[in-house]
Image (cartoon, rainbow, N blue to C red; front, side):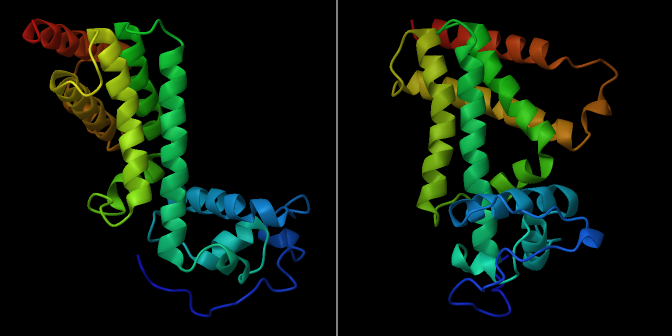
Length: 228
């Protein structure tokens, strides 16, 4: 995970945006600019993580897919591990945005808003199982990556805010925090069971929305009673 690139380059090579070989199946990125090279590399690695896994891709392949020279990544990332961290950071931003957008489609404080956050989480896992696994497997708990730790807290914060609105309490209320954690645990487990193809253990058809609504209602109702 932390293997450095084989050769360091102190600056971009002149052929950073070199013409690509059509035989390689790479589309020339003539519209790319220096400012979005980082984003293009992250997008390329994200695709490779999905198709080859986090340990099954090369930086050279990522550069080729982005349509740049093999030296270009050094302008933004010091090594392979840092590129993967960039993928995780970007994924956490997108996951938080999807959760917030899903909740916004329903009345604040409603059970539907809480369930919708869970649906966005499950949908993300299904759409990008490789990246989803990477987010939770890159490090033990992101303790050595305060930026990722903060983004994880922001994602959890979306759940906390929705639960607080539903229970009519403050986000820092211990009951709200416990409720949010329980909801996250149920949804997280359901997500991994789905992408690991383990839901076939039951003969019953599991509908995501019905599952999320039932779990949300049960936990929120129990939390509301226990707070009285």
